[in-house]
Image (cartoon, rainbow, N blue to C red; front, side, top):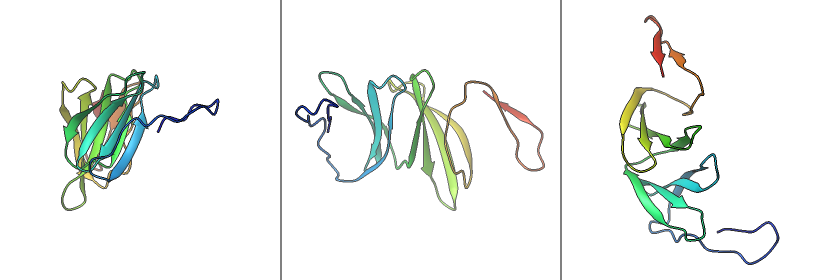
Length: 127
């Protein structure tokens, strides 16, 4: 639902098809909403004519927008406490697997290069 701050009438933007919603996150500029429904990640445009499209299939439990709003990172749980992070452009192109590790708690973006270190291993730049 879109609820105007001035108290005017609410607008229904989307009707769930599976009945199960998970993570949701608004793009940095507020024009798009990424959300998990059932076993897919969807993008909903929040403009004057709302439209929904499926961006990625598969069970996801976290979504994080890139600072410029061009990509999102998606965390999915695999077997045996493994988690996988996939990044994909909002237009559906450029899907890339970024990491697979055990017990990853949170997905996020940084505006600067990040150094990732696993116990007992050398430093690896992650940009």
